[in-house]
Length: 115
Ligand code: 5GP
Ligand code: ZN
Image (cartoon, rainbow, N blue to C red; front, side, top):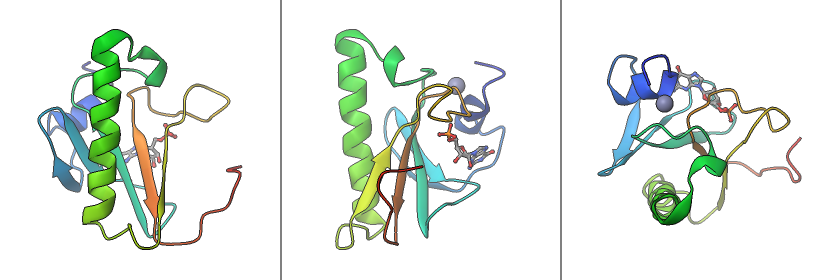
């Protein structure tokens, strides 16, 4: 999608600090990190939110994205201390970019529940 911020990052039109790529996903540093490690994992194809990843294809995409996020966490050294993977969906959750993304947060004690 031409006017989607994360599609533009995928296309290389907007710079980002990429930490890992797969066939269909990219992980990059969040520009406004809320933890010592804060990475976003996104599908390269535009999907607005987790609720839009439907059917068998969506099921497989979500599985791959979560596995990929866990690999990113391992590679960034988060396994020992632990980490959180979270996806905000819609207004009440504060989703600010309408391209599906999993936040991978770690490197400090994380509060629960999130605010
Ligand atoms: P949301 O609020 O939708 O759950 O998460 C969107 C995230 O994207 C936020 O944590 C925000 O800091 C991050 N973000 C917004 N614009 C950019 C950008 O241009 N580059 C990067 N790397 N992250 C961004
Ligand atoms: Zn997009």
